[in-house]
Amino acid sequence: MPIYEYRCQDCREKTAKLWRGFDAPKSIPCAACSSENTSRIISSVAFHKSLGSQLQDLDPRYDRMVDNAAANSARSDENQFLRRSTPLSDAEA
Image 1 (cartoon, rainbow, N blue to C red):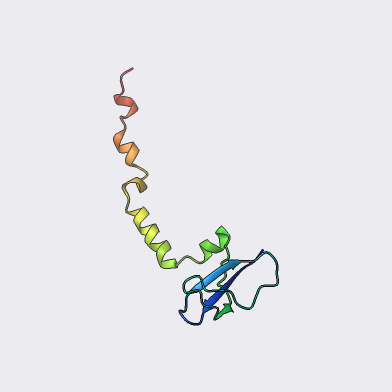
Image 2 (cartoon, rainbow, N blue to C red):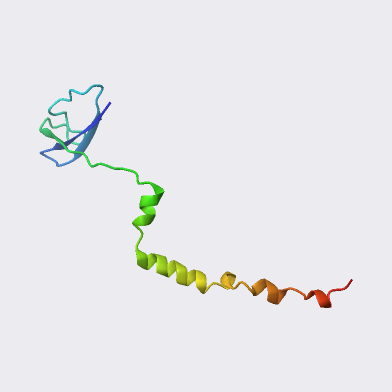
């Protein structure tokens, strides 16, 4: 069941109507001002992208910014755990 959108020619408000069938009327009463002077308009379309295409659309500058932030993070130092650990030769048996 499609949703049709109409624009009121008097108050310019948009009204959406769920229609039970495919033969929609040429006009419906405006929800804001009750005027019969409405005309059907083309609705905007939304589509979902896959994760792969979303990642392809990322800005390369953003990727560089994330890489730089990760490189400057304390967690990026692979030797941080070695510096904080006690050497085995100093450990008590």
